Every structure is written in C-alpha cells, then in structure tokens.
Image 1 (cartoon, rainbow, N blue to C red):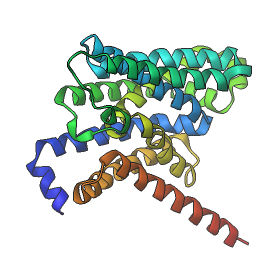
Image 2: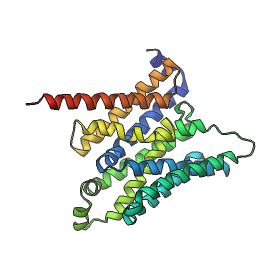
Image 3: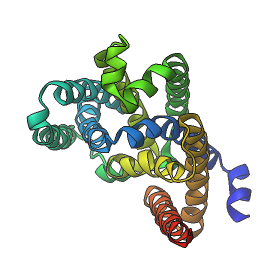
Image 4: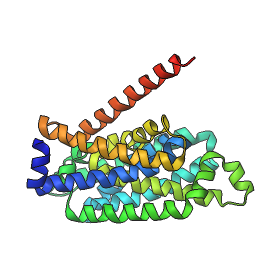
Length: 274
C-alpha cells in the first residue's frame, strides 16, 4: 500500500512502472521465441555487445539508447550470419563478440572528457531514472514489435519449430531469422532500461520459460509471459521501494524464485501422477 500511494504521488515512480510494463511486454512476446528456439546464448551475445554502442554514443554526444539500439541490431545481424554460416566456431565467435562489445563500451566511457559515467547504471539498470524521451522511444519500439509479430507470426512460428520444413515451403528462412534476431535486439534495448545489461537475459527468458511449463500454444505462451513479466516487475519495484534495494536485482531475484518454485512444483506434480 505504501508503494501504491507513492506511485500516485511521485512522477519518477510512475515512469518506472510504465517502463517496466513496456519492457515486460517486449520480453514476453520476443522471449517466447528465444525460449522455444533455445537461442538464449545468442540473445546474451547481442545484449553484451550493446555496451559498445552505448559508450560510443555517449562519447560522441548522442543518445545512449539510440547507440544501444544501433549496436544491438548490428550485433544481431552479425551473430545471425555467424549462426547460419559458421556453426563450427559459433560459440567462440559469439563469446568473442560478447567480450569485445563490453570492452569497447568501457573504453569509450572511460575516455569521456570531464564526465564520469556510472557504469553500474548501465550494467545493472536504474529504472527510476527513465526519462520521458526514453519512455516514448520504448512505446514506439513496442508498437513496432507488435506490428512485426502480427505480420509474420506464422512465418516466425514455422522457423522456430522446424527451419528445414519452412525452407521446403519456400519461406525466406535466412531473412526471417535475421529479422527475429533484430526483434530480440530491440527487446534487449527495452529491457536494459529496467534491469541493465548483466541481468537482461533473465527477464527476457524466465517469464517465457515459466509460461512454457503450463501452456503449449505460442500465442498463449506470449500472453502469459507478458502478464508474468509485468507482475514480477511491479512486485519487484514495490519490494525494492520498501527495502531500499536495487530495483533490477530485486526484479530478477523475484522472477528467478518464481521460476524455481514453478519448476519444483511441476516436477512434484508429474511424479505424483499414476
């Protein structure tokens, strides 16, 4: 109740809740594809390459969110091509891009003259500092994600479950796969605003993973994952407000606790079946 009262009184908390809901919508929709297709490692590579774009944008005086978006899309295309054409060295190349992106970002940030950037904000997030401009950009990116998913839902579902079958049906598998990775890149940028670079993969995958335990339709998974993501984010914000703990870490620990409890309960229920 204290948190609810504070939300109506403080604009920064209203922005934090709005940003959390927008990020949850993205992670629920796109995270479903990440979980079903099992490309969490690729999503992690995209996420950690983002810091390079953020650092470069800050160094040259541009918006850090715009730099993150451009870097994420470039990383998604590069990693997608690696996945499709260099499978024998896939894990090494993804790991290298993961590390190089972080290193480039740190070097750029360290060179910003007369301005000391708090790396903790980018690594672990600070949803309480979200601006009106960032909220508008998050809303726009969410609308783009929804439009793309509606337009290509059947195609994405086909390549998620069986790429070879989709190719035999004449679908442009490579183009669709790269588009899906670009959607993951956009989602990563949205979620970074809430939980930061280090924790982004947990919020992208755990709500969808919980949903997968209870429903088997892609549409139902998306809806449930969006709802769970919003629930975890809002409750996590309330807990962090009342305990004065970091909001991003609180949201992730809460989400992970629910995933662990759900997994244990599901296995106990399956064992109890005759």
